Image (cartoon, rainbow, N blue to C red; front, top):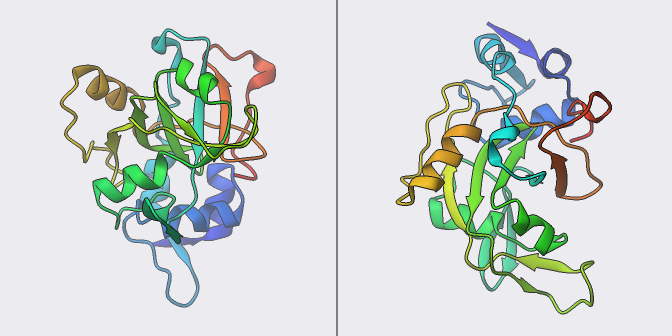
Length: 210
């Protein structure tokens, strides 16, 4: 049984383009994208039941969030893809997600973990953010890549979240276990958002426009 992308968007609190972006990542099994795009009702119900991320356990006041697109090919010397997609292998995912983002790198590093979201769901987790390189633009308005980033975890099925990575670091495994598959809404004009770990009522937002 299927629902339309509009019905799925209403149920998940996001726009139709955001639902289509989620479908294009491959992380929702059973989607039908030939002809009229439709969303499996069972998968939708499972996504609606996903818990919110508990950021209070991270022990930092703020965490950066990478709001990812579906994968797209790029012609760059250090990577072939940007974005998140289940068809990418671990090396491709790490290269795709670790830069080049317009951000304040020190502010990102201060959170010690970078959840990657699509449509407000955490689909991957990066750690090892202590070192970065910039594109040469002065100040913190340029684009940066986290050169020592590690892919602590990622999902191939959002409806049954299991870490597809095998992190050797116990802390990486713990962070991935806490965050993968959870709902983590954020608002930003660019790919990087900053979310307080102890939000007030005024900070609560939905995923519209992601």
